[in-house]
Image: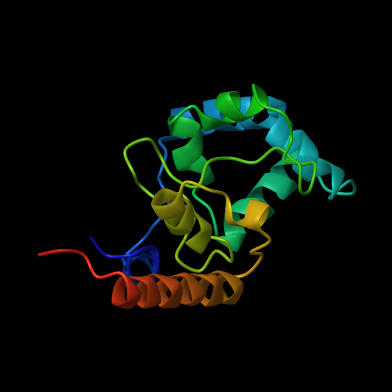
Length: 156
């Protein structure tokens, strides 16, 4: 199995694109998103803009598949949980249950999903705020494992 760094690099090279909606779905999407805690948190940072403008700006950034998250029911799931303890904002999942990444390859924290899948821990909870921090931490862990393996080789 490839480690999280290799998986992330493969993802960065992938052909990622956000979900498209029909006109009917688009109306329902907007109605439900505008009611979500995620949107309410986002709107607080953009008080001088209309709801449509705030949502349009978020979609235009292209870092996250908001429509794909909506189709997966993630706005409702996010509303059921407390805001993130690091920034007090409601967040959406990085990926669907089926494994499709909702964050784009150029999203600044897309790497965290791959790290968390391998280690079962949120990198922020370990003090790892950037990809470089996580790569350095992983390199240290790899060196420790290599050293331990040389000192205590497994029996054939």
